[in-house]
Length: 133
Image 1 (cartoon, helix red, strand yellow):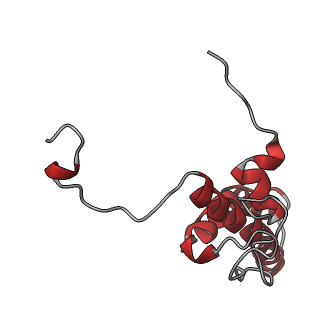
Image 2: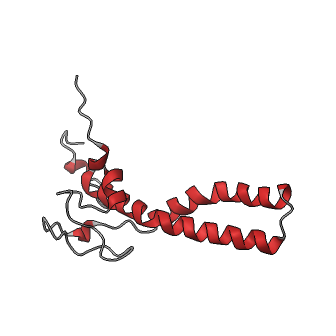
């Protein structure tokens, strides 16, 4: 059994981080910082299928918040930093890190939806099953 591995640039994460079209790998999926384009300018893929919803924000906050809480605690307890300075530094790091992660994460989720043929869930009826139930 052979397993063919794709180069990182062709994976959903690689394409999403670069903001490239999941079908042709050349066009762009963004029309602005976070706004999805209507379609790919190279191959014409319609991006109306894409709905990452709150996924990018959830992942960005989860990735950033845990290390940042530790850093803020270290500022407070280890360095005896004034609270106002700790809060200022922590908020700047939080907002900058989350904003920096939003675009690659949104691109990753959009590309993963296309490549994995993800679609909205629906209930299956017994007659829809190939074995008849």
